[in-house]
Length: 131
Image (cartoon, rainbow, N blue to C red; front, side, top):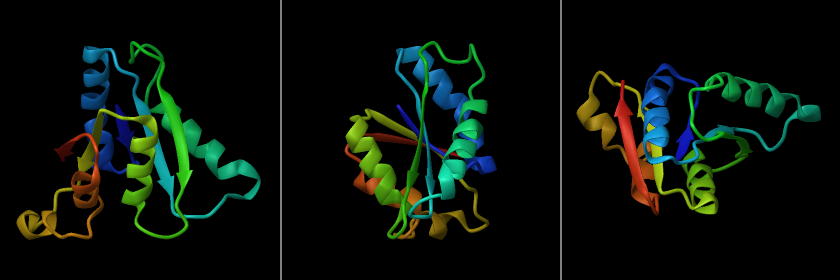
């Protein structure tokens, strides 16, 4: 089960559902954050983000030990990197939060949104949870 997060309120709102699902089906939960950069100086950025990811799942919240990933995406859509990681992990489900827009109807169908690109490109089920 892959949980990509940008640490936004909408993303973090969906985390309890991802944890509940992972525990219910006894699946490993992989938390992923994609950074818009080619690399970080001296590994500082990945270490700080890994700590942030680890703090999202305090000990005892998951039955199976979670995995934490920080990936870099210097160019192109972040959704491509998320889909690449999902394929590499052979994820059976991607769970992600959606931001609520004032004009949710038209905004949710724009072909350039990350969620739209993930839903259309995923080789597995995608569960989106709107805040």
